[in-house]
Amino acid sequence: MYSHGFTDGISQEILNMKVTKAQAQANRAHIVETASVLFRERGYDGVGIADLMASAGFTHGGFYKHFESKADLIAEAASCGFAQGAAKADGFDAAEFVTYYLCLLYTSDAADDSLRV
Image (cartoon, rainbow, N blue to C red; front, top):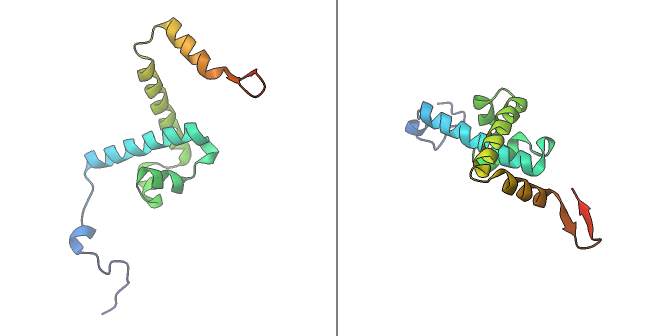
């Protein structure tokens, strides 16, 4: 009998497993959250699909079950990042938030004592 080799050693039960809609939604949310972090750290061009999916714990090919393109993902990841930022800002009063934000933006460089953005 001909064997194509792709399923050798894998039980039929595993091959027939399906992801529930709830799990698919959870997987998608995890990919978006991971992308949101990576895009902020490395920029859009600094994150490849393969690296993103590996960081999220999924295969490269699985990306296209959730998104049509990387551009579609960045729109969702940006929304996720804004929501995370808003949640972190919740509880700050406006003056505290501005002070905190400016402290992050303008830091003193000990080497030349100048301000940098």
